[in-house]
Length: 370
Ligand SMILES: Nc1ncnc2c1ncn2[C@@H]1O[C@H](COP(=O)(O)OP(=O)(O)OP(=O)(O)O)[C@@H](O)[C@H]1O
Ligand SMILES: [Mg+2]
Image (cartoon, rainbow, N blue to C red; front, side):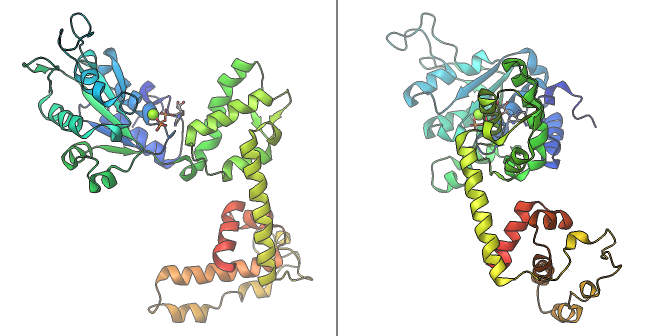
């Protein structure tokens, strides 16, 4: 099936399995008329996906109208959405107002920050989704409009339904096709690609030609939790261009203060954790570092007998049937780590040997030993 070739989804950058799945879903869903709910933390790309859904259908020749439910005062929201007839309000427009749904006729209405929609309007939205008709304020005859609704929220709607802040009938009506956009920290493999695509226009704007990030910056980007997701990543790079003063790569010193500070605290915390672990698992002095091992798992002398005897197979075998698999695996993992931590003082090497990130290694050290 087509993916990146399709222009409607070309602006969605990412090669992680989650993003590839979402792109496939967009291609499938876009041409249909189904209402779509987009969920995800702030800055994950909900609006980008809403536009892709619009661009991927014939509706792209008609308007894409965004309504930010959080930005319009409650008393104005109904007329903003559904319009009003002339003379309904003192000071109203001559000829009345069509309302966003009628303006978008044939196209898409993007209801952003859906959780902020007041309960009375939730009822009206539900009616619209069922009848495809709107009724302007001050008019008694409903009008048919052909609009596809795409809604987005970063709130947990199911939770809001529980607290009676969101209508359950509307929730079930909307929750038929939901695209959940995962936070950036759960798809870190997208970060290099996103950086590349952001660097191009930033270079053009600031008249630089820097396409590389220093190892330190890469490492930081790969461990920072990105609460503001893709938007925050873009902002961090843009901020780096303010401080950039020429050179081959973007360095740590070009990054915004809060990121550098976070990095400093992280380094400090890792150092502390490392010290704590070393008191539990002292380094074996005379041991040859594991990094001296060649790819076959033997050392320069050709073998490492204690390595093969490291795992007490009898012990694990006796756990089978009485302990869940996860518990057995955890014990094994801790055992392997205990050995390697004692023999390899260089934690970056150790992470590499294990095929995990340094950050993942520190997480495991924390989990098992402190
Ligand atoms: N996968 C992506 N590829 C390229 N750009 C992206 C991607 N995801 C997000 N962006 C960019 O990040 C910024 C934030 O995206 P968007 O406005 O769609 O997020 P959002 O989920 O609607 O956030 P909010 O909940 O705060 O409204 C935009 O500039 C958008 O173009
Ligand atoms: Mg948005």
